Image (cartoon, rainbow, N blue to C red):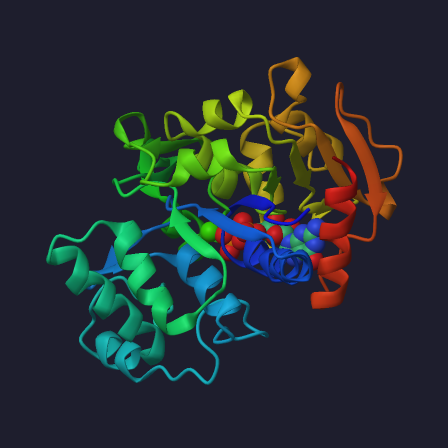
Length: 318
Ligand code: GDP
Ligand code: CA
């Protein structure tokens, strides 16, 4: 379809890889892609605003990501981080590379000068030319916190502290999207969804990457009320996430770590949920989600060609 418009809901690393395939597919048919990116992981470190998911997507699509580590910049060095540690400057558990720091400096300067995050993101993207429109889901503060047992009571800690510092191992009651109720979708987000011919949910972490996007008032409704079919891609193959600790996140919600579990969490569009279609891995053939068309295909994003084939399969589900 010429002039097709595709919106992708995405977190960081998994979503960024998926977007490589979406972009490759879009180029073959002249489609436009808008990525609506999670900001729940964003945090201030040493006075700098860091947006891990936006940066993973921007670096990956811009050819500047480290393919082995999965996050941050390729050919990275760590001098500033070592110097900060030598001062005992907390926190020390979050990796901040020297090249990466330049991004956070530019972003923080623009934020301090009054630019909203979506404009800052667009400005950073003029360097990286991702060839996908990158939109933070909101310009407003929205932070994912985990409510954990600590010091004899319940405490909410920032998602990054929970994930990076504690390796998602603390007894956890729930996640809270702090600020979500008062957040507004960034300019262009609900418009892109309303105008879309297809909405894709990347194989991102459903609990801490996709759920915070949907928690911004107006976003979920614009998808449900829109005319575009919604196709999700499972981040779970067999009973495990392909990488990362999505199993721990799903456990907090008492959702089974399986393609069926995540599909059921999103829910069928005809059953008050989001999905028209759900792409699962070959290994998970036979997965049933009430009201949803399920198809099993190879779902490992080993290279761009494999990922592009996944996107073709997603489009064929519509
Ligand atoms: P994060 O924000 O950096 O944690 O990244 P995302 O939330 O966007 O993506 C993380 C998810 O990507 C994890 O739950 C993984 O299971 C999933 N993932 C990573 N690689 C693959 C893959 O090759 N295939 C599929 N289906 N999922 C993947
Ligand atoms: Ca993330």
